[in-house]
Image 1: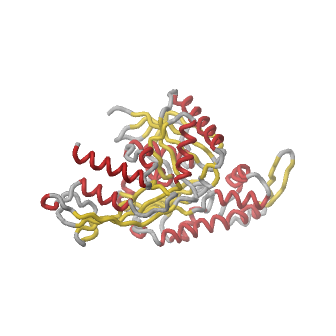
Image 2: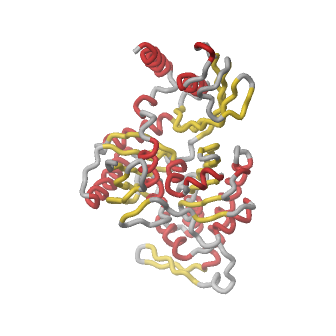
Image 3: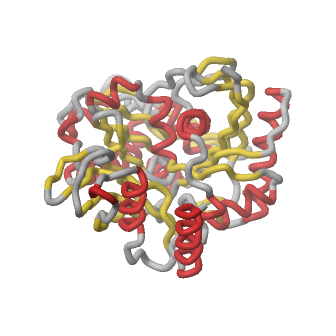
Length: 409
C-alpha cells in the first residue's frame, strides 16, 4: 500500500506543535519531523492576535519541515477552548422509497435532518455523534441500512464551536501559507493514539486535559458514544501558582513540573524552592506551592466527574479511564482521579506511532499525532470550506442544490 505524508497541527494556549508523519490506512504512523514553538496570540482556545498565531504556525511547520526534509501544503488542525458546546438533537424522515427499504441515502437524510436544529446563529458543528437509530418505534438500532420501515429517526449529539473562532483559525493557518483539510476536536484527535481498538470496543473513557479545557470522550462498541468539553483545563493549575507567587505563567508551569507532587509528602513538603525571576531570587516552600496547585487539580477532577455523570455509556467503560494532557503526569494526579471517579485510571501513552523525538506524554505531540492518524483513518470526510456556511440559510440552500444534483446525476 502506498504511503502518504500527512501533517497534524495542534494550536494550544501554551504551544503550537506540528507533526509530519508517513502513514497508510492499515499501519501505524512513522514520525518524519516534529516542530514545537511557544504559542502566542491564543487565550482560552480563542485567537486574540491573528498575526502572532500566524507567525507561530509558520515557525512550528518550518521546524517540522526541516526535520522531515519535506514541504507542507495542507494539514489537519485541532479545535479547542472554553467556548465549545454540545447539543442533543433528533431527526426523523418518512421512507417513501420502493418497498420502504432503508438505504445509505435514507441514513444520510435523517442525520442531516438532525443537524438542521435551530443552533444559535454564531455556532458551527465540529463533530457529530450518532447514538442510535429508531425505526417505526423500535430503538437500539445501530445501523438501519437494509432494514424495512416507514419512519426513521436518529438520536445525535453535536459538538459546536463559535463560527468566529473557527474562521479566525482558518484565517491564521491560511495566512501562514497552508490549506486546512479538516478541523478536529483535540479530545477526539488524541483518542486515535491513546486508545487501542480493543479499548474502544470494550468501552473506555478518555479524559484529555488541554491548557484551556478538559475533553471527555466516551467509547463503546468501537465508536464514540458521547463527548463533553469542560471549560477548565490544566492551565488553571498553572494560573493558580502564577497568581499565588506573582510569577509568569510559562515559568510557573516549569516550576510545577519540576517541583510539585500532589501526593502527601510530609518529609519533603517543607523543603525550600528558589524561584529565579530576572536577576532576583524568591524562596518559597514546596508545601506552599503544592497548596496553591492542588485545589485547582481537585476542582478539575470534580468538574470532570460531574460531567461524566450525565454522559451516555460512561457506566459501560469496561477498561476504565485513560487520562493524558497538560500536567496529567504530576505525581498523585491519577490517584486523585481514580479515587474521585471510583474506577480504574491509567496514564494515556501514545500507541501505534514510531520515529525519533516521541515524548509519550507531551500534550502537543499527542494531539498533533492523533490528528494525523485521524486523517489517515477517516479521511477528510468533512470539507471544512463547505461547513463554514453550514448553519446559515445560504448553506442550507447550497446543501439542497447539491442533494438534488446527486439524485439526478
